[in-house]
Length: 387
Image (cartoon, rainbow, N blue to C red; front, top):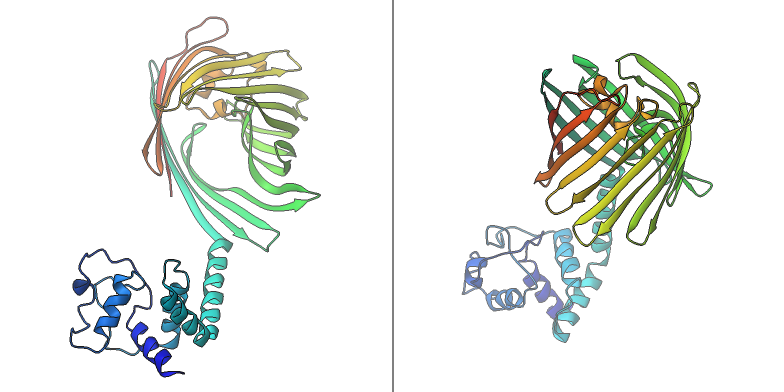
């Protein structure tokens, strides 16, 4: 190594192995362990003032210990990313890069390996607390916690599984732990395909928003699915059916549009649905959804307006008996039994971000049955936390 290069390496060796930002304004405070009488002082101050190197988080360089070539390579690798350097500084960095080529390559391979492992397995979760106050039927509360593991089986195959625990509205006080989802995802014939127990939501969820065992394939805005549904109906009785259908989503100007079809084969029921959301400026949106069931001819209609900035919304719902399903989002309400024969009325809600990972939703429903019989008014509050 040339004398000049050796001296430069020694100077750079005073730098930290992991470069961190230092916020003190005075360089003398940054490098307290480099004495003003040291032969490298001026050079270290020059490099620091140029913003090319920083010290440890405690404002020192830790200069009383020997630096390894890998630590030196980390410094050089960081310096190589600098763009605002003079010709002299760039020449020095290039010389150092040649000297530490092997170590830099090893470091990058190690970092890439760590990133790959981090991407291979991801653990996340969520928790929910729901409270409902009914005018003539008391208060109800339920809880739920879920833990999700997403992983890569290979570059082409992904795995997702979720464990859920908590009370359900159909089994009050009956805490349980279940394997909520478990599926493999991969590309098949150009389609993003998922096989196993998975979530299925069509439209806003009024038709179905639940899990089922089967297969789903998607390309752009088009999705098809087939599988077995195994859950509970609104009376809490076990309910099974074979579901298959399709959904197509597209945009038309300011409108998001979805067209849905689903057949519950075992019960010989077919559903046709359409929903849209139309943006009005930056904050307001109109939304509407329509569902028709073939056997009874019954229909479900919902339409309303929302204000994105405040999270406020108002919606009118008119759901006839045959269009109400046991696997829709309304079937998992805390007052499901009241909806079984159909209902209609206004629904008002407020959605507020409590923090970056917590959302509070408050809903007031003023419904009556299709025959005009008044249902209990209810106010419900749901806190969803994600981690």
